[in-house]
Each structure stands twice: as C-alpha cells, then as structure tokens.
Length: 164
Image (tube, rainbow, N blue to C red):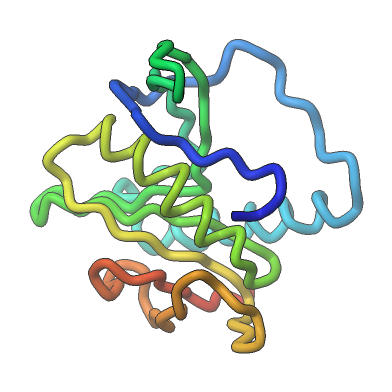
C-alpha cells in the first residue's frame, strides 16, 4: 500500500451528492495543474464519445464502520463513471498523467467499495486512463491494455491510453 494511502472498507451506504460541503482548493503545484489539464481533456473526450452515459468527477458521500466499530462519514470523488444500464454495469475511470500503481489502489480500495454501496446489484469494472502505459511501472496486478474503456476485461486492472 502506498505511504499515506487510506483504503476504504466497511462501507454501509453511499450516495451521489452535488458537491462536498467545503470549498475545493485550487491545485498548488505545476504537476497538479498539468494533471488536472489532462483530466479536463479526457473528460471532454469521454463526454463527446459517451454523452449521457458518462459522468465526470462525481462526488459520493459515504458512511463506513472503522476498525473500532464506529461509524464515520466522508466524501470521495472518482474521476469518471461510465454507465451501461442495460448490462447492469458501471466502469470506474481514474485519470493519471503518468501510469502509476496509485491508480490501482484508488480504483480497487477506494472507489469500488463506495460505488458498490451506491449502486448495489451493478457489476463494477475499472480502468486507468493515461497517455502511455509504462511496462516498467510495477503494480499490484499486471495491467491489461484496453483499447476502449467501454469494453474492459472483467475483473482486471484495465488501462486505456488516451493521449489527449
């Protein structure tokens, strides 16, 4: 697990919310600004390609039980969701300017538990969106190159290369 990463488990309930109850601060570093610029390009691409099936930057409010049995409430924001309602499936997207194992941890140990609680009964798939897949980057699970995030390999750590 990456240093400082907080996995989410024990999610009791989750729901989509318009915005968190605080003001979102602007990015502080040049790297964060470049990452957000890439994310905006990717959002625009997916909104054009998938229209109403794509939800960019959704906020979730969730409640979970911590290791001491206490209920805690918090928020999280995956980068995007693709909804395939007829198939009962949601694809969670995480945009990264550089392919990184952080995407794997966020998708599997942060967003899947929350989205699963918000949409029980839906199959969940995951896909990192990045300009390049670097095979030298070691992830907890080998990535599977995905030419179209609408058709990910079920159960895999899918990676879609979008150069923007």
